[in-house]
Amino acid sequence: MTAAAANFLISLIDATCILMVAVYCVIRTPFFYPILKDRAKPWKQLLLTLFFGAVSCYGAFIAALTDHTIISISMIGPIAGAMIGGLWVGAGAGLAGAALGFYVNGTASQAAVLLAGIMAGLYRLRKKDNPVSAANAAVFTAGYEIFVHIVLFFFDQARPQINAFIPATATVSILGVAGLVFIFEKLVEERQTSASKELIESELRIASDIQMGIVPKIFPPFPNLPELELYAVLKPAREVGGDLYDFFLIDCDHFFFAIGDVSGKGMPAALFMAVTRTLLKANAEPGISPDITLKRVNDVLCRGNDASMFVTVFCGILNIRTGEVVYSNAGHNPPYVYRSNGILETVRMPEGMALGVMEDISYGQDRLVLGRGDAMIAYTDGVSEAMDISFNQYSSERLEKTIETAATTESRGIIRHIMEDVERFAAGADQSDDITILSLTYTPEPQR
Image 1 (cartoon, rainbow, N blue to C red):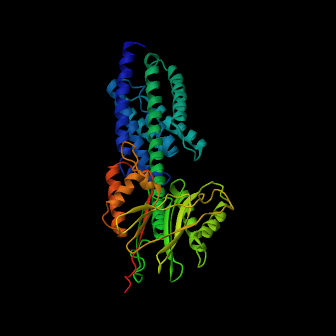
Image 2 (image 1 turned 90 degrees about the vertical axis):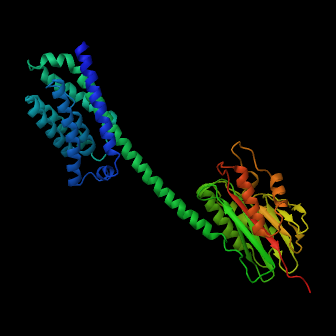
Image 3 (image 1 turned 120 degrees about the horizontal axis):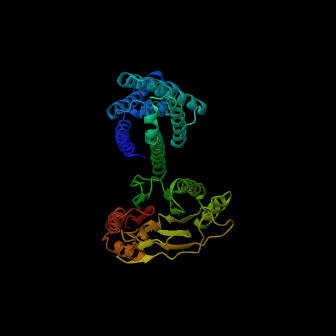
């Protein structure tokens, strides 16, 4: 390549880079993507024609500045316009560039610019509704450049310029068309991804509202039962989670409560959580002990569990008149009993496998008695396994000390004290797991 050709190549690259920056800035504006999204409408075709016509005219203007009347980057506009907007956009852009080129340069060879838009548009028609990639656009441009320069080679007046500058103009035209098509490809892909993401986020927000709507969240839940002072909190790590808690009266004297943690996170865990909660409520009947309830729920969850999901559950039945709690466990963390005298006890856990793992297994059962002012605190491992920014775990030991320093056995106060300490420990680290705590304080009226 001669020095003149090299300098010309540099000037074309500079001009094309300016063009790319300008195009990128325009298409990033809010009003441009709606035009591109529904480009088949006539008035949007007109706007795209004007846009790519301006690109083609820019190439003709650069040709006039560099004093190269036959070869230029005018074909970038019509070819890219045809690849993106179709035949009419390419032809219109080519007509604009050819007209300005003929007006400025006065050579009939500017018809090649118009022909570029038409031929690129016909090529686009073959693709029908399939998008044209940057690679396909580059291949077409290379072929068209070869065709044009073969034709122009037979014009004596063009031969000296063509021989010297074919590599420069062909290279820049190919890169320019491929670059424009690539920019538009990424714009469409980005906006489609953004729209899909917004749709998913919207659906997840709705799912989160539904999930939080199915767990009890009105406290106190039983204003007419002074024997029960209850509070619970569920904080998912994502929009939806797999933790659950529930409580309800089985009859006038017996109160059922449960807490659980589904394996995994996200929508599958949330669905499994909803099914588990429904089954617990359906099987906790008067006269049915907690161990039988867990066995029934487990047998149903195991059937058709192709995803091999499971859930740990702790559940119990409180006798409101006596304070006795009969409880059973399916692989869950042992709760605590915080006595009114300040003593913290870990609940002795009967044996039991997580629900959904194996069908037709039995669960153990145990019992304890709550005195006046005693609180039972159940939680999921999202509390004890909460992490700080150095990936240190909160731990059960710290949870026990936090409960002991709560200075109250009132359920709401205990849970608030725990949550504040967990947040203080995490110190801005991302929540790694769902956090659920349920606290039940037995508050019978004093006997006269």
